[in-house]
Length: 460
Image 1 (cartoon, rainbow, N blue to C red):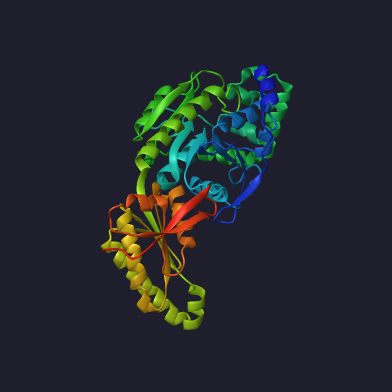
Image 2: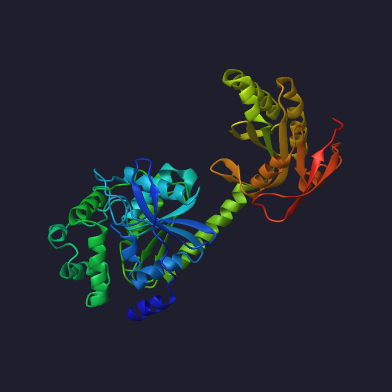
């Protein structure tokens, strides 16, 4: 173990800065982001944590660094603990769901895998069940569905509070910490003064004795068995050999549609201590598989169309609020009618413009031409951009690079003009549509230059 810690000290990355996210209730949540891999992974903490003290122990820092090798990893202190705000009332699972929302919003993550070790597992499962559009996968470590036995649940610890009184009196002291690390399964570190000093400091800096006890009590009363059937995302339930009840995890996995259990080599119970490699490899393999499944199911070739009213600010100023509102409403009705006629799907309406998808580029171009003509009686003009590419379906909406290209093409169009990409032009050969060369263009935020074409009069 000490050799591992020494190696970790040598190999660890620089500690990422601590930042803050704001929940909808105005609670500040401390978080760190590390790694730039292909997977977004939210680490939902267990009992109590302090982000900066965690990084002071080399093996703990190495654990997070290893997870971040192929992930963009977000680690946070839950509200009421560590560097996050203390709150007036105890933060329930429902309240702590806002912690995950806050850090995802702060880091511009729309969908992510959620990893909950120990006491963070129940929260992660609840979040996955409640917000399936935000969760690509669920990962847990340790048992979590119900910590104490019940007539229909022959698992768990009959007395999970056997050290609660001593915790209130001796929290964060070296003697109590030595006893506690035995429960961590880290007996060989019990007599390591450096580790004991760090672990005791982590306790004191993570929560007060009363708060730690309250979180422990809440976990003891947690029962998410009824939630698990609603977890539609693929789930990976991890445990270390000899640590925890394998039968309990198998039964827990059976409650979820797409869950499986993976046993890791025996080491220590705490995920922060011990060799991180087997756990990291299992997570990476799982996420790679989930990514391949999502890519095959949620990507398809589609044509995107973007419209925008030209000089809308000037029109609004000249017409006044009431008349402009009526004009925009008539514009929306007109565009929607034409989308329906050409089998387009409205994805979004942002202010004065539309974003729609089509299953054929020729229909999209003809719809664009008709839209331009149809709004002329309203004494307005629109610009339109069309592009065909691979579109990702994210939470029921189209996204990805093809969508960004389509939006940038539309922004390049002039009044009453339809601009299309080279891909669109190439795909509609024989349709009767005619194009004029509009030259090479740089599209904001898109690599390389793009050859665009304006649509001329066409045989209909």
